[in-house]
Image (cartoon, rainbow, N blue to C red):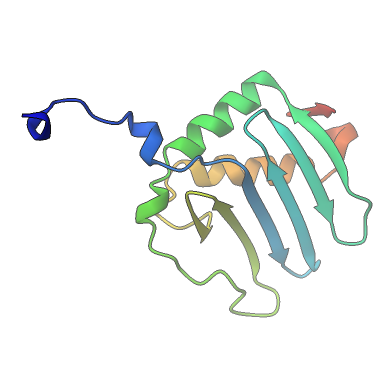
Length: 137
C-alpha cells in the first residue's frame, strides 16, 4: 500500500525560495528609483537613480531579521495590488520574490514584514557609509 504511505516531501521542496528579494522604491516628489537585490547570504546590490551602484553585506542581525520577515509573507497567496503610482508624487515601495509578488510593502497581506523591507530601503538610502545594517562587501 505505497499509495497510503505517510512519507511526504519536505515542505521546502515544494515551496520556492524567497531569495533573491528585490525591493524597489520609486516615485515621490524627489523622483526616487532605488532598487535593492538581496541574496540569501545577505549580499545586497544597491542601484539608485543618478548614482553609481554598490554592494554591501547585511550584518548578521539584519540578515536574520530580513530572512524571518520574508519567510512570514504568504508569497503564493498574495493578492496583487497596484504596484504603480496613482499620482505623480506617489512614493511606491514594492517587493518581489521568486515565491511571489510584486506587491506593495503596505499591503496588509505582507504584514509585519512591510516595515522591515521599508527600514532596509531607508537605511541604505544614505549610502554605504551611513548604513547601520550593511557593511562593505
